[in-house]
Length: 430
Image (cartoon, rainbow, N blue to C red; front, side, top):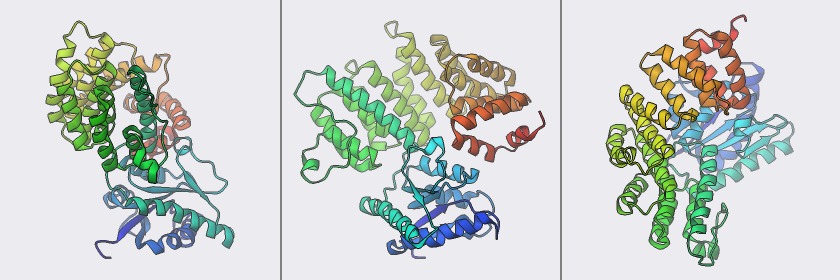
């Protein structure tokens, strides 16, 4: 295979030789995927074609994360497929999702465009091939962007919505210029692109995963806006995705606009830098960097407790990533003291206690946050399951896993695949 040839890794249920699952997977591979991709020069590979591939190994994970394209067949709601699908989403690189017509999409990926295929007749099979080619054409036009954001498509969409609301409020707070911030844009072309505002270009590029285009628009926005809070909100989005130049811009904006950045934008900046240093495996550097901004705030009587809690938690998370658990515990406890109702801080503390081997304390804090009358997300439930497993509270484990499976079936499937202890606990007689 030439070094320049693109690779498409097919994430698919496979099954044993001769099984209905294998026959179905082979039909999809041979009748849909290979014909759709043959004109684009792809080397198309599936896990069973790899030497010694009987489980999710390092070669498979490398392909999931690094192949130019992944095609993901969600048919049958296979646990391994969900795990690899989640890893691909996390890599934020091009993928195409498929599912057999008539099957229901799982909740956690229902918002992502998915091609429904039907290979029961030559005509419907041909339509499926054309649908895949239409999706590939978009990636061909964009050059298969290879930047890694480290966030899922759903997370990015949610972050974009939050950022749009933030930008709306920032624009509303400025003296009126007669121009309104657009809603989440579609890709602009021709004259529309030439005359689009920097905000619109930034959001368009970010939504399509084009970090280089987003950063170019960001630089223009910073030059033209005269609004450091708006600039830092946008720069923080790219910095949180691991973009080096944007992280440097966030630092420059913080240093050159002290006192002129609103509290919400400052939070965005600190949170983005924390995520940047974790993503780039530079957590010790990040600790020293963020301490410069955060420690003065923690002793400032004019700063509210909620802001102090947020900032202390950011330091706690970085120390946790650096495996400096005692320091992480100190700042996470400070966050809880300032804002005792925030479940995320208690969740973080339970992980610190668990990592330090303080299982009784981890169990106690999990009990505390699970008793709160607030919504628990899949991460909160997953941490509670981990702690209760170690405490042999198997009834609680089964109950929480059932709740997690209803709320986020993808994460629940991945957790089940990765944990022998969880599978044993669920299969235990009640």
